[in-house]
Length: 68
Ligand SMILES: [Zn+2]
Image (tube, rainbow, N blue to C red):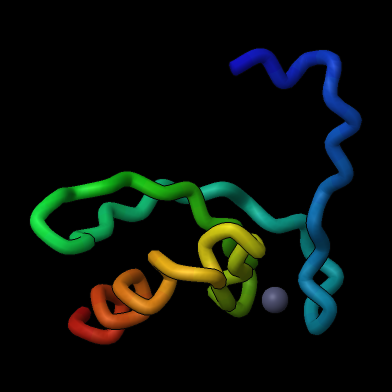
């Protein structure tokens, strides 16, 4: 995991124009526990989902968030 050479474009919340922050969220998926990094707006707390997550695990993540 060496991101130094990557061109990292910050994600911006369309609503607040704030730079999103990465936050690790623990996810229960099937019989395992996973930690995924989600991008979250520090102002409105909207969680932005990467394409990878949107395809599968995100369903479980959403369930976990709703429980709180
Ligand atoms: Zn926002």
